[in-house]
Amino acid sequence: MEEKENADEKLVEENIRINVISEEQIIPKSTEEKILCCCLNYDLTFSEYKSFDKLKKKVIPAYNNKNEEHEKTLQDLYNRTKEILNKDNNKSEITQISTKESENNKSNKEEEKIWRKIGFQTNEPRNDFRAGGIYSLELMIYFIKTYEQDYIDILNEEFFTFALTCIRVSYLVRTYLYLLTSEEIRINLKNQKGIFATRKQLKYFCYFLFDNDNLLSDICCITLQSIFQKFRENKKIGQKEVNYLIIEPIIQNSIQCLQNSLNDASLNGDFISHLKQSFRENFLKTLVN
Image 1 (tube, one colour):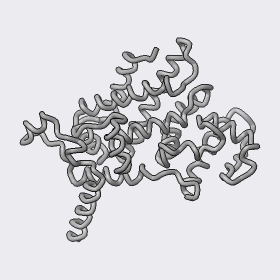
Image 2 (cartoon, one colour; image 1 turned 120 degrees about the vertical axis):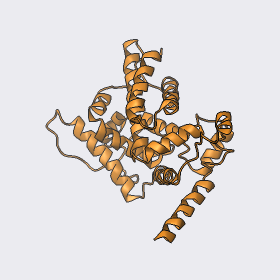
Image 3 (cartoon, helix red, strand yellow; image 1 turned 135 degrees about the vertical axis):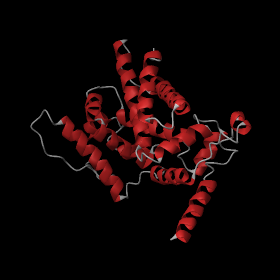
Image 4 (spheres, rainbow, N blue to C red; image 1 turned 90 degrees about the vertical axis):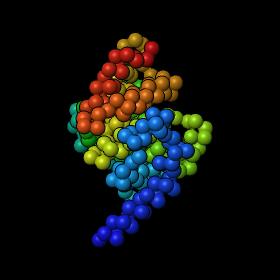
């Protein structure tokens, strides 16, 4: 038993090393950590490594329309949304979504209407998952389950593209936390694309992750709530439609808010409550004009 645990530990440590998550040239130690190394150390423990590695394996796969589970999850998103939209009507029948090869896909007006209502660009949602992968779809389901009333409010807003916003948020948060393939990490760091966690921020994230398997999804959902709140506020001042130029600064600001929350977090506190409070305070200061 002990030999197996040692083998598992070596395997995880090797996987972390290969995926350049903890190497100093990727996340260098701060001057403060170098000077106070005896009492300030942001190296991850084995348990934190293991939690991080498990999460990474879960969130990096691409969407695959030949994967039965992926297709079932997409069908679930469609079904849940249609049920919500039909609550005030007498309709109860739920149609199956068209397959990619189906010639009826383009002619199914009701299906196209629902996909666009969710916030996809066309009635072929599979094309929009390139950046977010299967995780962005799972995040949408998690959001609906956890914040159903918020999702109902979103569906009632004509110009808020929930799906595309969700995909973008999930990708940027994953980028910030190094939850990408090794090649993606190297390219983004080389081209300085995105905001990246410091060793302290990653350490704190992994510390909280150990006790909360849904931490990444909770963070993304709180970010989505904040974006939607700002969208509604912008509507009051005449800005109705959400597009890339408008929403990107809001998302980037939200990532910075996450950064600040991880910097200020107490390891003995409730991080999600702390994050929600940070977003509330940030909302009052940073409404987009």
